[in-house]
Length: 217
Image (tube, rainbow, N blue to C red; front, top):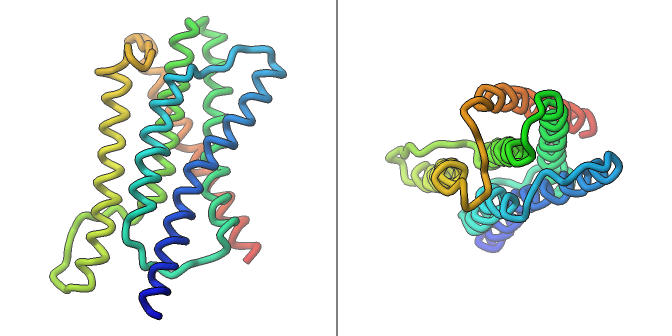
């Protein structure tokens, strides 16, 4: 019976994290499709862009997180936990792209540069969600046997998070032509500024959602 309970915890906790990753893309893609349809503007992403974003923020992470050991107690309600993680991230992506569209229009940036900035910001936002789902990020081990097992699982999460950052960085630099990424030196300060704004939007929305979630308990 204890093994059955632990397996149930692993299944529910891991599906909960993987579901959050998949739901994010569904939410922001739906909202953006409506927004750009109403605004009569071209969609900012090409299929190859979504391949890169999905690979490092959904595909590989969800596969690894779904299979890792997880004996943590199940907390809260499944649907609320999934939505509370997905909505702030999806809204951050939508906000990033709307802000980028406005800035690009003002600065008269080329379409391919505008799309590339959207890819970078969306990937960064997805990695911020992944960092939340992988917490605690810890690779240290303690000699006590029980603590070693706990930290071994956390080591997998840390390794996963670092590898996804490396893969995304390689994708937008070394393989930029393959993934149709066009970035010039002139827009790098703009990307840094938009990334900082994205960071504050992401953690601000997460704080608001968590506050609301705590009040509903």
